[in-house]
Image (tube, rainbow, N blue to C red; front, side):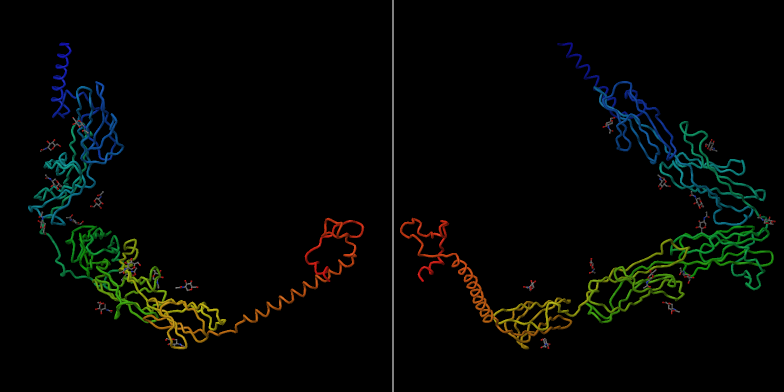
Length: 594
Ligand SMILES: *[C@@H]1O[C@H](CO)[C@@H](O)[C@H](O)[C@H]1NC(C)=O
Ligand SMILES: *[C@@H]1O[C@H](CO)[C@@H](O)[C@H](O)[C@H]1NC(C)=O
Ligand SMILES: *[C@@H]1O[C@H](CO)[C@@H](O)[C@H](O)[C@H]1NC(C)=O
Ligand SMILES: *[C@@H]1O[C@H](CO)[C@@H](O)[C@H](O)[C@H]1NC(C)=O
Ligand SMILES: *[C@@H]1O[C@H](CO)[C@@H](O)[C@H](O)[C@H]1NC(C)=O
Ligand SMILES: *[C@@H]1O[C@H](CO)[C@@H](O)[C@H](O)[C@H]1NC(C)=O
Ligand SMILES: *[C@@H]1O[C@H](CO)[C@@H](O)[C@H](O)[C@H]1NC(C)=O
Ligand SMILES: *[C@@H]1O[C@H](CO)[C@@H](O)[C@H](O)[C@H]1NC(C)=O
Ligand SMILES: *[C@@H]1O[C@H](CO)[C@@H](O)[C@H](O)[C@H]1NC(C)=O
Ligand SMILES: *[C@@H]1O[C@H](CO)[C@@H](O)[C@H](O)[C@H]1NC(C)=O
Ligand SMILES: *[C@@H]1O[C@H](CO)[C@@H](O)[C@H](O)[C@H]1NC(C)=O
Ligand SMILES: *[C@@H]1O[C@H](CO)[C@@H](O)[C@H](O)[C@H]1NC(C)=O
């Protein structure tokens, strides 16, 4: 007994110790947690597959993975494409008598930069010796930032390491810069920035690296830059033939939504030209010596009258090309209203609807479409060539009919911007305008004949029904002004005369007159007819009977032969000697009396 108790105590104490060891110890170095991962640390490229096995030396009650609070009841965690940046997988298990513990998997998700480029800040064209310039290396979409080392080189000469302490795990863009002060010996030198992801021994070897190059030119003479306006722009007539082909715009024209970015390249095939540039109010470039391509770029285009012009300077003159720009803007607000009228419309009357469209450009590409329900009624276009946004208020004249009651009118503004514009023309629609149409009562004449005969004592019902908006009030007048029925279309008539059904609403009063004629009462006639019929039937009956009577006489029917006393059957007459009983009906009795 004592041994057993002691054993239990020891066992409880051990379990307690184990548990307290397990609690608060989540490090992979924890020697107590009897879990083993096929890899404790992993470096995975974003979108690559992952597979990790969690195993145990002792038998576990349960064993599962938890990945960011998602539970996977399997000893292997595997995904075909890892699509998370910040992920903390744990293998978790419960052991009998010990409790549960878990082991973390340290995972680094990386991504090499999409794009890298070096640019010279706040300057274009050749550099001037002894002047300070700043090169910027734009690195797009790299992760994780804390593993990134950006190295700057000039030729093969290492210049600088740039590292980041930011612990963000999702991809970021970074733009480290390098300050240089070129000397005349640096003309033609190549600068390079390299983005290296240092991912440790578990990562790919050698570490993934992306780089970008930039060649600089250093001028010894002071920089030549024509000031805008001082250039003598050649007249098209004076332009040497074919020179316009010197410049090519890509794309050749643009359709831009107000506030959107735009970028157009101007390139040349000219090899012996001095240089080129863009002259424009927004996003222009300086004159660039020996350049063969210059880019006009604007982050958000907001100049309605912009006229970007690319120019190239040859040894003798200058050639320009203007970029056609359509800057457009969909309406801020659209509304539809009824002019000079309020409340319901009346059928057959003319009304004007107005569509107010605010702040739309360019108006020459605008089509205003009027609709009734889904039916297209009218398309309005404008020839005004204003480039800036305008307000327009086209109108539509309508003459509603009774079946237009409840119709919805609406206007739509559509900008048709051609093939360079958005695939679907931008469209804005007004709220629908619900119209109510009042119309005069229409009396259903098919139920009301012009003349109607009535027999004395047999009343007839006249049914007067009318459709109208608002719902008409129906009244019956008799001969000709006596009101006989107020509100209600059914009238029972007894008397002859003119009955006038009137249907009245706000719009009009309609009426139908019915003439009621009193017809002869046919009852005496019918009585006479019945009497005649009785007589005729009686005559026919007597005739039939008389034929029957003759027949019985020829059968020598004689009362004298009947043995009235001796025959028990007093009603049976002897028919000759043949003893055939002859039934005597009541009808034959008068014959006995005669
Ligand atoms: C995993 O194990 C720990 C102990 O290490 C426990 O507290 C936890 O409840 C277990 N389950 C999950 C889903 O983390
Ligand atoms: C790389 O940069 C160029 C120019 O800056 C841009 O046109 C292109 O879309 C970029 N590519 C990616 C994958 O970001
Ligand atoms: C570049 O020029 C802009 C103004 O033109 C100025 O705000 C910016 O600080 C300059 N950047 C550098 C790196 O000189
Ligand atoms: C730059 O970083 C690399 C690691 O990628 C290292 O080998 C090198 O020594 C560093 N150079 C300097 C000057 O810090
Ligand atoms: C880390 O970098 C991101 C993106 O560059 C930035 O938004 C964030 O503020 C930075 N965090 C720290 C702690 O520097
Ligand atoms: C521009 O081209 C001319 C003629 O080819 C050449 O003499 C000059 O050095 C070039 N300038 C630069 C900065 O490359
Ligand atoms: C208005 O233009 C559309 C095409 O955009 C056409 O389908 C419709 O028939 C036109 N409507 C009228 C009334 O001309
Ligand atoms: C064009 O529209 C503007 C503004 O609505 C107006 O002032 C101008 O007179 C119009 N021009 C023509 C030719 O219709
Ligand atoms: C848009 O307007 C421009 C300028 O008036 C015109 O040349 C072009 O044909 C219009 N596009 C369409 C699709 O109507
Ligand atoms: C117009 O009619 C529709 C349905 O017939 C209704 O849903 C809508 O609320 C009405 N609008 C107004 C302004 O009365
Ligand atoms: C009027 O008469 C018609 C046809 O007999 C009947 O359908 C209708 O219900 C009647 N209306 C009333 C209000 O009695
Ligand atoms: C029928 O009644 C209406 C309304 O009272 C009246 O205007 C019309 O003249 C009447 N018609 C006849 C034929 O009396």
